Image (cartoon, rainbow, N blue to C red):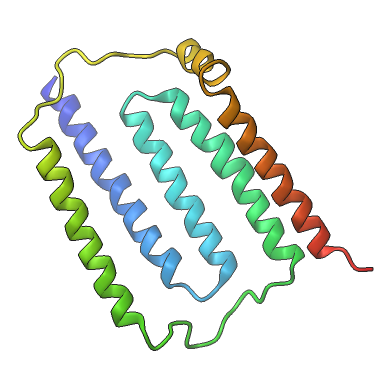
Length: 168
C-alpha cells in the first residue's frame, strides 16, 4: 500500500510540475498559437490529476469538453480572425508592477481566508462517492437551466464569431 501512495505522489509531482511550467509559459509566450498549445498541456495535466484522484468522469469531461471543443473553437477563432500569431516584443504595459502587487495581495488574502475557514479540519475517512449516473441526474434535473443557459451562451458566441469573420 505504501509503494502505491509513493508512486501516486511522484506521478502527482511530475504532472503538477508540467501543469505549472505550461501555465507560466502560456502567459509569457508571445505567440498566440503557442499559448493555446500550452493551455492544452495545462488542461491535459489537470485531466491526468483527475485520473489520479479516481475521478474518471471528470477527467473524461475535461478531455472532451475543454481540450476537444473549447480549444478547437479557440484555435479556429485565432485562425479565422487573422490575429497576429506573434506579437510585439513588448507585450506588457507600464503598470505591470501594480498588477503583480495586486496578484500577490490577492494570493495572500485567499490563503488567509482558506486557512481561516478550514483551519485544522481533517478530510473525512469515508467520503461520499457519486457515480456517473448521479452526476447525469443532477445535470439534467437540478442544474438543467444553467446547463441550457451555457449552451445558449456558447451558441451566441459561435454566431458572433461567424458574423465577425464574414466579409460583406
